[in-house]
Length: 138
Ligand code: IDP
Image (cartoon, rainbow, N blue to C red; front, side, top):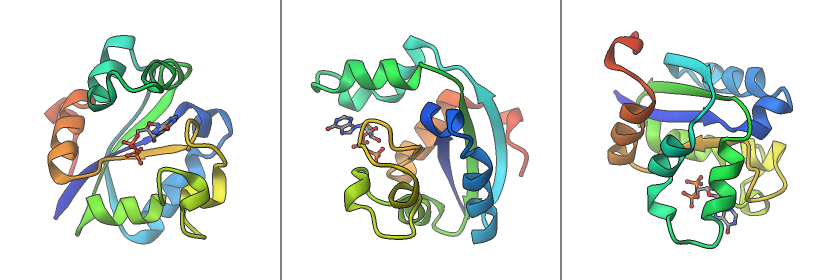
């Protein structure tokens, strides 16, 4: 069993796609072991996206992810990290495989609906940023 950090980004929440995304995760057979709607602070956004600091899109990315509520989740299942990346599709929606969340619901790289950890190490780090251990109910 593996856990990954998944987040419906502000564009997904604004567009009413939260239910659709939860539904896809559940239909796949994965378990949502923690979930909350929240506003991300500037500081948390900069920590979460720390690896992109200094890149030209960093400031815009932080502004976007703090622009409205997100729905943060911990998703559990076999190979959850790589399988959720596969369900999400590529970062650039026009490169995402048909039938993936980003291919079906996004058109631009800066507003691409969903975040998912890219490795088990990132997952552990990101889950720790957004959830207290007691908020995770297995
Ligand atoms: P990921 O979300 O698929 O893991 P990352 O490369 O980790 O992709 O980038 C994090 C987020 O930063 C992306 O989801 C996207 O919203 C944003 N991003 C990445 N590259 C660009 C870019 O070239 N322009 C604008 N935003 C970008």
